Length: 93
Image 1 (cartoon, rainbow, N blue to C red):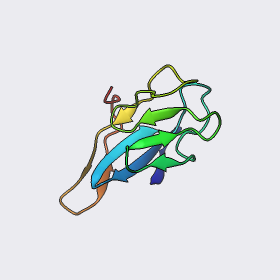
Image 2: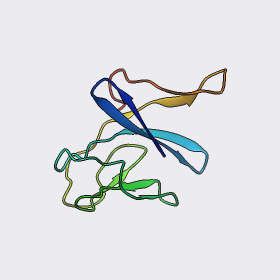
Image 3: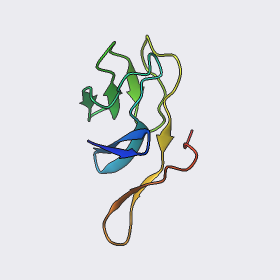
Image 4: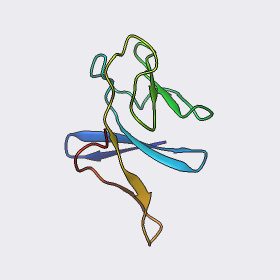
């Protein structure tokens, strides 16, 4: 996992079993940092370090309380140079 910052937006980029995911580094429960917490590579889930809410990396959907709202996700790809590129246009969800 790597956190990248563009202006005021921080995004966590994850490699989960060879699939790349990009999710906003902001828990929808309390606006705290999300990507500084643990993550479960087997289930492609990120765990908020503050209150333990789990989010699906592919969709940003909350899987456990206290979060009830999804987190923004972004398209991510590897370009022709081999660089990882996150499209920070409108969120994927």
